[in-house]
Image (cartoon, rainbow, N blue to C red; front, side, top):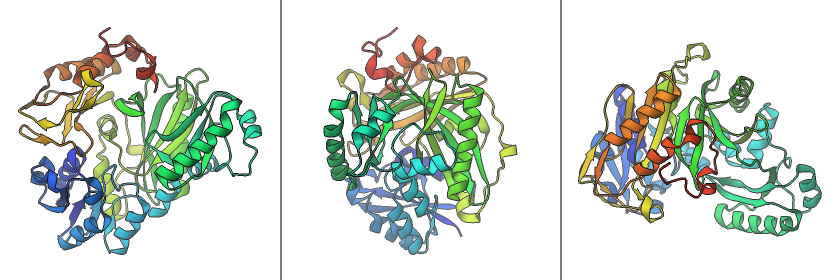
Length: 450
């Protein structure tokens, strides 16, 4: 009998359990001591306590995860997102233990995890890239000459960076050399890799991305998403398809993303991320995420494809069930990440017990949640309570439906980011697609009612 070990927690663990159960696959979820009473622990067929609450002692403890999977008779490990999902060393250890890794090969994770190498791979695959250095910036390189060729402003990026970390901006030549040295020191301390590269900076850029699937033989895309509404480089609202994107740009990023997957011999779900410059009508590669994304439900809603099911089919059977010809796009979907944070207190985490919790219902409304009424929101992990996903015939209807759904949510016991979502979705800039990835930081009154 197939039995899947889920090396994650919260809403993504519950999400994976749901699809696995529909496929007749048993589930065991790894949890920390703090998550004994979690929804994921009760939803799975079984659970294994990995260690105490701190993530390094539990969810990031590679040996404990593998030992628990083997002890419970599991034959595969799904890492979800975050934690160990893009850790090539862990992927290798899972395979060496005789378990199936639900994700791409460790070599693909390594390649795409190094941002400068990923950039070069993208360039070879015909994916548009921003003007910048070819590979890591060598210590002996003439950085001043290279920067003049790229042009200011530019960005110094850590090769091993990600999630908005390892990035420093340079606005003029006098700042360059000192910034490079600071970036190298920071990258070495945080990522264990001090290599950096230079790249042109795009002001007021939108963040767009393409969902891909591959099984090592066939490679497809499932359209694009826009994740431009961000706060401190963390996505707040996502939508699919990406609005107000020229047809030529949309076609280019979709087709070149598939080619990148093909060149990697990619197996599993992945996302190719781009910056879109609305002034130049150009898109350029940022990075590739070698895992399921937080925002995958909006792609599922507009395509009808269960991405977790495809991940499991590829891992267990070696092939996905859909071809490019099977993929059709219907309507528009919006996702709001609802966190237990206090908007009136600089978005500080708001842990506590959920004394009341009512989710909206209705046609086109979907909730992916890792909590229910009575759950305790702990201070140890990401503060996401749930994702609200609304699918409608067009973007205007999706915005309206999302606002209605947000009004219907009832949460007591903790503060949430719901007021922020209402305000952002009501802004004329969002309706007009005039926002960008730094919009929240650059508009002082943004979170005030329009």
